[in-house]
Amino acid sequence: MKRLHWLFCGVLSACLLHTSVALAWQLRGGGGARTFVLPHTGGHPAPHPMPQPQP
Picture (cartoon, rainbow, N blue to C red):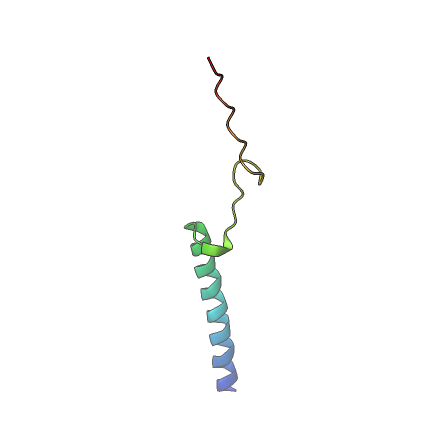
């Protein structure tokens, strides 16, 4: 019975630790490759600049 008690305590502690670490990582702006940000153009290619008028 003692072994089962310590197993449950260990699993609960690991879950709480994992949750708090994940929350802290997200709050500090982490995420690395999992973070996907669209450019300001809405995902479309940037427009080409207009040619300068010839004198």
